[in-house]
Image (cartoon, rainbow, N blue to C red; front, side, top):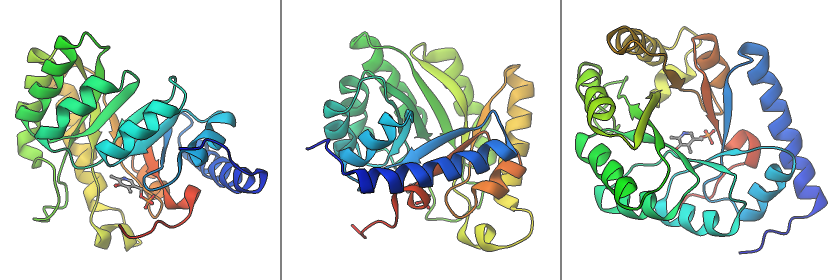
Length: 236
Ligand SMILES: *Cc1c(COP(=O)(O)O)cnc(C)c1O
C-alpha cells in the first residue's frame, strides 16, 4: 500500500477538505470534521494528514486494519461501519489509535469491545451509541427509548469505553427535504434527555456530505464527510 501521492491529487483533496472545514467552522467552531475515507487509497489519507487533518472515518474492519498499519500512528480513527460482534476483537485488539467506534447498538458489542481492550491493555476507546432516529427497518441503531439502558451499561460496566456521544444516519427523505430534519431533531431530544440523566455533556455525530450544514444548524458537533472531500466512491 503506497503512501505516495501526486501534487495534483493532494491539491484537490486539501482544497475540498479546507472548503468543508471552513463551512463547518462557520456554523459551529467547536465541531469536528471526520474525513470519511472508505474505499479511498491510503495515499489520499496521507495527503490530508500532511495538510494537518487527523480524524478519519472507515467502515470496514479489514480495510481499517490495513490502512492503520501503514499510516501515521497519531491518526484518530473513527469506525463508522456496521460492526459485527465477531469482528469486534480484530478492531479492538490491533488498532491502538482507534479513537472512536461510532456504531455501538447492542450491549453485547459494548461489552466485547471493553473486554478485548481490558485484556490487551490498550487505551480506552470513545464510543457513540448509534440511534435509529428514522425508524426505518433496514437502519441499524437502537430505538430512542433503548438508549438510556445501553448508555448505563457503557458508563457503569465498561471501564475501557468512554461514552462520547450519540450518532445517527438520518433517512434520505429527511436529508433531501428543505425543512428541519426530523431525524436530527430526534437525536437532539434523545441526547438532551440522556445528558440530564447522566449529568454529562455528549457530542452529536450527525451530518454527511449532503446534509452536514443542516445537521450543524440543528446542533451537530461531529460531521462525517466523505464524497465532498474524496469524490464519489465505486459501488462495492
Ligand atoms: C459513507 C458514510 C459517510 C460519508 O458519506 P458521504 O455522503 O460520502 O459524505 C458518513 N457516515 C457513514 C456512517 C457512512 O457510512
